Every structure is written in C-alpha cells, then in structure tokens.
Image (cartoon, rainbow over all chains, first blue to last red):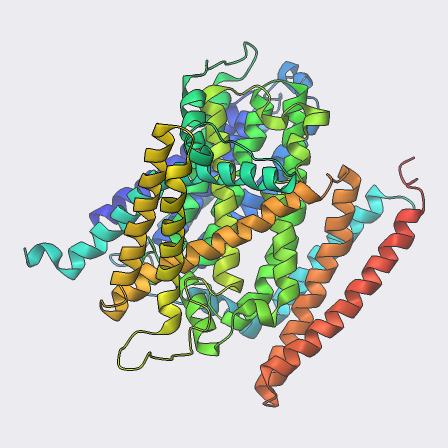
Length: 168
Length: 440
C-alpha cells in the first residue's frame, strides 16, 4: 500500500513537473520531450489503477504515434524563428483571470462533492482480462457513440486529405 | 534451504536472474549476428569473410567490440549536448525493455503480461525517439534527414505490420505471449499455415521497422553518409548498433511467437515414444544435431593453420559437446526441464532462421527509392493487410458458426486475399506509370 502511494506521487510529480517544464522551455524539441515524459507518467498512473489496456493504448497511440508525428513536424519547420519570438504573449492578464476562474471552479467542485468522495483504500479489483472488458464496453453498450466518434475521425481525415490535395 | 526456495521468493528471484542473463548475453549475440551477417554475405558473394581472428573468424566479434570501445568519443561542438547524450540511451533501453515479455521457453520469460504483445510493440516503437532525437541533436543535415526518413518509414510500416499481426491474434484470442504459443499447441498448427499472408506482411514491415536493407533509407550511405548516426562515434555509436540488432532479435521473436509456434518443437502435438523408453524421436533431434556440429568442429581442429586456432577450434567443439550433453541429459529429466531446455533451443533456432531471411534479403535486393518505399507501404501493404484481416475474420466466423473446418476456410480466405493482391499490384503499376505531377 505504501509502495502504491509512493509510486502514485512519483508519477504525479513527474507528470506535473514535466508539464510545467514543457510550457516554459524555449527549445521546441525539449518541450516535446517533456510532453512525452508527461504522457508516459500519466500512463504510469493508469498502470497503478490496474488499467493495463489503457496504459498500453496511451503509450502506443500518444507516445508512439502522435508524438512521433509532432516531433517530425517540429523538425520540418524552421526552429530559429521560434527562438527569437516572444515566448509569452501579452494577454497575461486575461490568461491569469481565466486560470483563477478555472481553479475556483475545481475548488468549489471538490468542496461541494466532498461528501461523495471516499478515500480509496484499495484499488478495485478488476478482472485480469481488462482488454476484453474494454472491448465489451466499446462494442456492446457504447456501440453507437463509438461509431459516431469513428465517423467523426474519418470525416476529419478525409477533410485533411482534401485540403492538402486540391486536385483529388 | 527449504524456505529459500519457496515459490514466493522464486517468483521474485527468477525474473531478476533471467533479466541479468538476457542483458549479459544480448551484446554477445548481437556481435555474433554481425559475424553471421558477414559470413552469409561472403558466402553469397563467393568469398570467405573474416578468417584471421580465431578459426574461421570466430573471435572477430570480440575484436570488433574492443576496437569500438577504445575509439575516441566525439561530441560535435554545436550539438545539443543533453539530447546527444540521451538519444542512444533511449534507443538501447527501449530495445532491452522489450525483452521483458518475450517468451524464450515455457518458463523462461521475465513477465507474462496479459497485454504482452502490445507491450513489446509499444516499447520497441519508442526506440524511434532515440533515432529522431539523436539525428536532431547532432545538428547536421545528414543526421536530420536520416532521422526524418526513419520516423516517416516507421509510422508507415508499423501500421501494416500491426495489421499483419492482428490476423494471427484473431486465431490466438489472447495478447499474452504465453497464451499465444499455447493456442498454437492446442490447435495443433502454427499460425503461419493459417495466415501466410499476414506473416509475409509482418516480415516486410519488420524489415522496414528495423531499418534494414532493402529499406535502409535512413542510413543509406550513398546519399546520407550514415544517416542519423553520422556524428556518433565510439561507445555511443555501438549503443545504436546494439539497439538495432536487439530490435532485430525482438521482431524475429515476435514473428516466432505469433506465426512459428514459439518454443514448440515441430509436430509438438504428435507423440511417438521410442520402444521401451519415454524418449521421443523428435526430442532427440536437437541433441544429435549439436553433437554432429561438435564432431565436425573436433574433426576440423587439427587442420587449422596456427596452433592457437587449433586450440580455439577444439574449445568450440568442446562447448558444442557440452551443449549436446545438456540437451541429451534433459531427455531423461522431468518433462518441465525437458520443455525448458528444448524450448529455448527451438525458439533460438527459429529466431535465427528468421534472421537468416533478413540477411538473405539484404544481399539480394537493391535499395528502394523513398517514394517507392512509401508507395509500397501505403498503396500495397496496408490495403492488403486490411483485406487479409477481413477475409481471415470471415473465415474464422464461418468455421465457428457453420462448423466448417478452419483449414478449409483459411485456404479460401488466402485465395481471396491473393486475388485482391494481384488486383492491387496491377492497379499500382498503372498508377506509377503516370508521371507524378501532384504538387503544384
């Protein structure tokens, strides 16, 4: 139990810390590396919750797929320009107010829902085959929303192809 | 003594032991794969290959390793030092981490995860960051271009290779590497015979993923010097090298587990005991084979030109004799020991057989051009993999619902897929004949 707590705080600290570093780094590639660390740390939290399938999907899709494309694009664009630009723009005031509002919302939400929160003393035991549990949920109960989301993605993909290639 | 060997302690100790063995043996194996590569290349070009260091060049990998470790370590002045330092480590760590779920024998597996296959795929695809960041950190055009090519190639071929694997996963019904092998034992057939097209797609995809010829565009020496490794030297360079060969063994291990029956011997479900004993004829085969090799080595030993080479050759013969002894001795031990020892033998034999194909392709096919590579991946392999997956799923469904034999329906699925493949190839020919004039 102690080990679980230590691991949880380790992964959380890693995720939050590297998320902050990602935003503050000037160098875009360093930022991307910190984002990868954040995603991996989040995957670690999934693993602590015994959601192995979510863990591996997070690693394969976000770290192994999307971030590779991110890094790929970053290397194609000219980095020197971004080094000379202002890192933070002048809307600091608005951003600060928005951040405060969001923080207040989260605080109130936690405060109001405190009675319904319960301290998790034990990870709920999942069945060892949680790949099949995910499949059952996606292709059984949530079939329609799942298909709608897939069609949305397909439309976005076709749209991107059409925009990139004027003569189809 | 009794409580030291209790199951709960063994459950912790054994995986650590396996991990240490794998990390220790892997660099040696990588070195000997290089020797095998040079020898196979020499054979295909009617040459001898390395002959000087040790009998028939058997000590060449050790000489190479010493040379690499003694080389000067250079970091370019304008490189991003942290990333330059980190990149090879990422590559080699990810390559080694993937071994955690690879089953070398029924018990010789560090961790039998229930998402084993996905774990190996995910971790080995993270190795690309080593290549991409290394290429970027070198601050050199050749390195950057090599890294970009590598990323594009990996993303394209990983899709096809993954779809190829799924066709076998349908049959296995599990992502655990152990259960996949056991499914092949239960069904009495290696999955390569049910989904040969899936195996072919995975093979092509895995060659492209490991950046091997004919898909070695990221390190094409006639265009990019050495690609992403151009600025690396000495130990860091050898880390990349180790990662590349470790990845080759990983993809060979995945193919062995999914398509070639893992640690199972050929005809695993067929038992014919020799009269009067519990020994099976096929189980005696590995011991006899290695014994033959040992005899050949000992026969060759006196014919070596130099005295030291005679001694080394005799030592190699002795080593083979010892291995043959272990293989033969396990015939008389309990079934668990027999399966463990022979499982490792068959697994390694299949892995090296698969790697032989890699070498064979490297020395027979000319390198692809980059647009040809992309066309092959996106226009041929991915559609073919999708069709293969769908036909195989239908074949499985028919055999489950209507009770047809899976052997029959899988053959029908293969025929349909091959017809589609011919259509795709013909279509591709027509398309590629038209000059490419899409970018304006």
